[in-house]
Image (cartoon, rainbow, N blue to C red; front, side, top):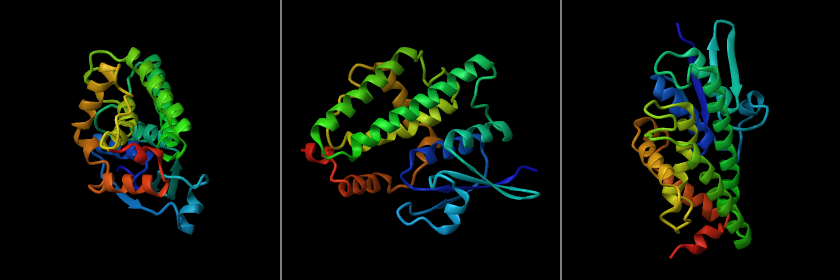
Length: 225
């Protein structure tokens, strides 16, 4: 019998979305519990050493076990759950996929600066950094529709939440991040149509992200016409 799973979440967190997408692709039932990261519950701090989401609580015969770090959670889901395989079986290809998952995390780090800064110079530096990273991704993509071709993978689960940011950003300004990356643009479109990706966030995600930008007095908002 599969372990019961509970995912501790935040509505805007892209790392949470990775786990949600992986669980959905596997067809695994799970309970999602959203918390306020600005007012973290004591019970959460006891199970999350870094004070971050996601945390996957696994119910076992010996009690509950809490897993933290999104890529670790995704790997556990892949290793323990039935359903479609989200990693290549070949060890070298699997290692390559893990490396690109980490690369996706570096893009998220740049995006944090892009969306939160109020400084025009920092904004432009981060915009160029994100564009440069996607130029590197462009070189590794094949014919699609997904990262490794026909089969959806954990790399796709990592990048889908990244692209989701731009669904909101594009309504504000033209960042030109994907101007010279046609394969990335096609990949983004394919991921946006995937049911697991569409349902990984609540319907109020765009409004929540916009409110986040307002709270940070983001330079991006000043570019909106």
